[in-house]
Amino acid sequence: MTQAANQIQMGAEQGAQPLFENGKWVWERHYPEGVNWKTPIAKKPLFHIIDQAADKYPHNTAIEFAGRSWNYAELGRMVNRVAAGLQDLGVTKGTKVGLFLPNTPYSIMFFFGILKAGGTVVNYNPLYVERELQGQIEDSETDIMVTLDQQPLLDKMETMLKVTRLKKLIVCPASGVQPFVTQILGMITGKGRSRIAADERHVLFDDVVDNDGAPAHVTIDPLDDVAVLQYTGGTTGIPKGAMLTHANLYANMMQIVTWVKDLRFGQDSIVGILPLFHVFAMTVVMNCSIYAGLKILLFSKFDAKEVMEAIEKHRPTLFPAVPAVFNAIANSPEVGNYDFSSLRFCITGGAPMAADVQRLFEERTGSASLAEGYGLTEAAPGCTFNPPIGRKKAGSVGQPVPGTIVEILSRDEPHRVLGVGEKGEVCISGPQVMKGYYRRPEATAEQIKNGRLHTGDVGYLDEHGYLHLVDRIKDLILVRGYNVYPRIVEEAIYLHPAVEECIVAGVPDQERGENVWAWVKPAAGKSVSPDALKEFLIDKLSPIEVPRKIIVREKPLPKTAVGKLSRKDLLAEEGIVRK
Image (cartoon, rainbow, N blue to C red; front, side):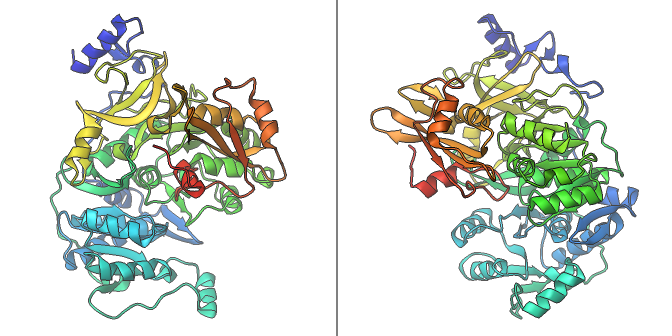
């Protein structure tokens, strides 16, 4: 018996049903029909999937973007030319190449071109300010950056060329992926495009791909070679580069594709509104789709009306997004004007989803396919999902995907594994767990202990092996020594029909330790007062959980680049510092 199984048995002796019993994990005994938790997970270089898709689905549309499309054969050829061009620029095994791009076909071409050249992708958020960019470039040792010829992207990178180790800037023309009408409008208005310096540090996209498309072969060790440096604040808030190997990313792609067992290879299509520089979109929207030969409906930004029109026109079958996106669609006054019947599986993750948001989306779109999942950057990212077909549990983030072990460790006795129904820290083991943090061995040792990735999330597993998250450990509010979980308070507030967005946080208080505060944005055309909300919550929360203060705002609450409501940014706006 493994050490983990021994610890679990010890937990069972203290009264709780063990997670591991009679040679099986609790979720294995209730797994979706036709899905094998022990399915073999291959270990391959990630760029193999682009070659495979080009061979199997050459004439299938790979990307639909801004009225233009690229098939898999065209995409495969372009990836090869990018790879060869990068090698001509000196990219070799381990060279760090940054992507400073919004969603465009260039994002995909360069992602796989970098990997095929032997390099490591470093994803950058296009909304980062110069201070953040400078810190990540130096920490990751990025030598080459890829961006668009658009302000302010190019302007920021021009500054980075002067103040960082950055050696070269590859500049892609926005006109190369825009429809003709948009190009003409840009020429007439003169807006957007920046002038590009003519020197050896600036490289034009056309010069990169001006080759025979035959890159030199690079030998990749999938288990050891890092494919992507994905930066995350983790549980400390200090940006760190999670080293995701080829094997990590290939494994998570296979785990998710196996989980969605009725995926129709070469036929289905997916909505791509999540930014590809974010790990959720990188794996689910890009990698899984290319492996399965799907059509990616790619958007550079989220606009509810534009997305609803595209769903009706293109009839996509898969729709991954964060809760804020599904909430915006559900609350759109025009939602009833569109046909969502093509959607077979909607996946939400990246942030907790309130049960009321799920209910509203399903009611107003007629789609009963919205399922919540859970993951984190350090796990490439997918760990658990509600099944696309079968038992979905509202309020749960589902069961572990194949090959993934979820354990709940006691916060009081960190080495004790808890049993069914017991709340503690969620820990993950599996082939998708990162190699570690780049150049941060101490942080790696703090995050990965005894082979387990410590997530910093509080949760429990139920009798069917479904994971239920309670909250982030760091977001826990301590009121007179009592634990208050923001997510539970937010769930109750979302029950009010006038509420569209809500963030709950702890605010320091000298007498009570912390107070519970809530920020609320009403839905369009609706209103609610703080006193009315407090009255509404009396029979839904304990007195210590009811917010001491409720702030109603007409403007949207702050969100991250991927569309998640941001407690951190809200507290910064309000000038509130938590210990």
